[in-house]
Length: 159
Ligand SMILES: Cc1cc2nc3c(=O)[nH]c(=O)nc-3n(C[C@H](O)[C@H](O)[C@H](O)COP(=O)(O)O)c2cc1C
Image (tube, rainbow, N blue to C red; front, side, top):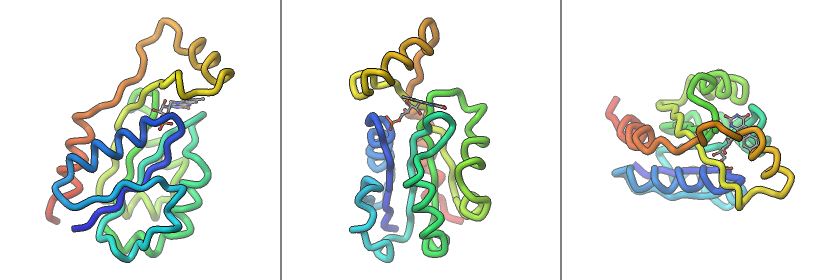
């Protein structure tokens, strides 16, 4: 199986997770920023995994638009979706259903909660100040590498 991992990342964590996932997959995989998806021939891939970050409960518009624009083509592939988010997994399902159509989600073979990180150095000045204030005294989010490994296994499972 040839797998395309398409990601959108604002401060680098979703990209990092996409690369870890690529390493975990036994299949041949390509990791591509969604901003360059136009240059990719989707017909060359048997599987597509979409990775997005969440900000203020939303996946970026370009991610949501990509899914809706390419839905029929995507549905012909083995599909997966993962989210990088700072909150605990409680809101994972809510974020999925508020950002993606039921049609897309029902077509996903695997859905993954990968956790997240605050990369303060890559945030703009104001964003950094706000996030530092909000997160004061709280445990900082972290990437769940074990979830990435499990996602890779499940995605490649026969069935
Ligand atoms: C301004 C801002 C808003 C955020 N809003 C949310 C949110 O509503 N829910 C959540 O779970 N995580 C939220 N996060 C955490 C990000 O999803 C997390 O930092 C993620 O790892 C970012 O991925 P990226 O580095 O690929 O951009 C927010 C982060 C920032 C900087």
